[in-house]
Length: 120
Length: 108
Image (tube, rainbow over all chains, first blue to last red; front, top):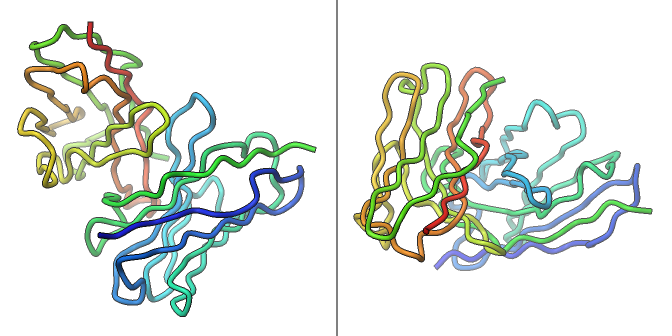
């Protein structure tokens, strides 16, 4: 059974870089599938941030593209999100997820999510 | 960018049928996926590729997609179906994922 677990600071200062990691168990990232990040501001809807293939090719949300980097570390079986120049608008629960098939979506497996607050 | 519009809320009595719409320009030409999210939990995929159900999802959940509207139908609604529901597509023009605005289903 594939399991995903997000980790990282729960509090980030404005203008700094948000960094999160998603540890994957029960499946080897290097074997395939797309691995994505989705966020949800408190009380609001879901927003796709971006996805990465096991080979390293990426897709990013155009509205966030200039600030987002997603990378994969197959040796640690994990993938990461970096979001630069954060503001209060980036406060959200951040989810990592795996695609159901060999295309970016839908997402068939999700982590439990981690709340990141942007505040000084 | 591609926009998916859902009604903010749908109310339904137990045992009745709930229909949740997802509107988008020529959405019938895209594959639509649906997620259920209960409070404090991660989303769960309930319908993919318009009408397929993952294993473990009750047959009461079904989907359709045509023209400018995709629909998630929940038959014989139960109290446990109360949740937020989101549609989602992959927009090939921007090479990105897009989620709908979300619909809160309330079981009366």
